[in-house]
Length: 554
Image 1 (tube, helix red, strand yellow):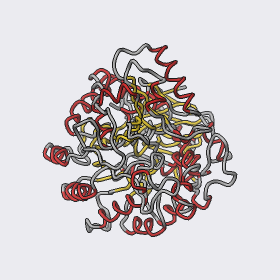
Image 2: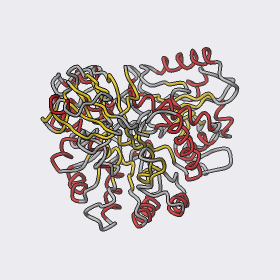
Image 3: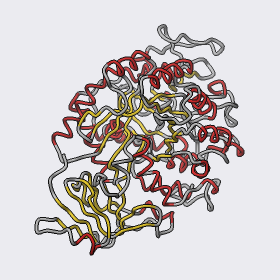
Image 4: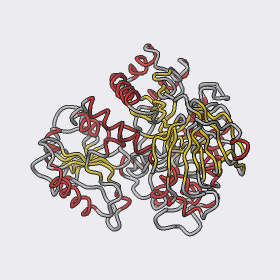
């Protein structure tokens, strides 16, 4: 896809490595062939060379988001997006206004992005009665921003077949009958519209399938969003069931073949809870490193889930949640049976597949570390890692370091979680959690990302949060949340570029401005190394380059 052209970027502040900068870059056939001063690089110019004046701006390697969901980003553009709203009443009013504006077809009204922790007053989940205020005529199904808990109105409960009362002391059946496991009840035994586990999965299964055209549109939208924010490569978890693999790969290929060089994708494939899907991947050769579309699309890690989220209190903890020790038996909800998790990790490792596991609570993190330790590979040659890795103590982090496990983390999560984590787990455990500084001191390889659409795809938000450990909108708390876990800007940038490349076995071609590397770069209007860290989110991407071609320009 790279074009046979020669280009020079000059009059730039070119970031090479910690405290080392150059002025100019020479690009030939989409790759960096020289880096140096303006005068050094000017000698390579010829009449057909395109010369790009950076006007003294900061030139960085393209950002590499180590874990997000591109299809989910596109999906959020087509549902009622409830993210960032400040009250349940505002969510209801916004949803009603969007329905009136969009006039959706008959069927399930879909909402996403709700986060009760951003509510100013009553920080509670919506119930069926709340969502009946959105519509009593059409089913309404809303998911929390984390995706690990859902909410529906009475019409949706009817559609699910969740009707009638269930005595509070009885455990409902997993499937069939008039009740499903994971449907919460009120004090009368009446379903209240809050869905977890099997019931949440059942609700998702009832959503209409996306057409191939919708799939391509969602991916194209997400890739545009990425380059607008300087993101040139991602680890994207779009495939959670093997039978969707071919459709999604076909959608990516159609996009690549229809437009200029675009985002480089490493697919992180899941198995839902069916171990047969892993066998399908292996038997078809869809294992880590397999290239599907030149240098732009390849297979990465097997993505598994150990637990849920802190916000939904489904992250698995070793001790009950301090602020609600009764919900979910007090300690969270495994997203997958942990015996199955161990089996899948062993089988994938034996087949040469990298494995990354979503683990947020300290019990889940401990389980995943133990599973990786049991593989008997202390060098971690396949670069297995833990995604999110939020609630930790010093012992868990030391074990991660000893086993050379990767930490695939999202610093931007703390901007919201800093308001709830002490209430959830207590001050002592909170002080050793989201422990990015400790990870660096212990030598744990970290890669940064956003988990978009859970959080905005803009890397500058994550960089600022890693450096300040603050709510970026309020500059709070004054000195940062347990500031000893802050990192400096160089570390944050490296983990958002070199870290992502290493996590995806791309460290010899991506993540740096260096001789022989792909010319994937981003020009910012502000030198983020020189300004107060809380101003970093205000910096803007002026242009984004992939394979030597500018794919976005402001």
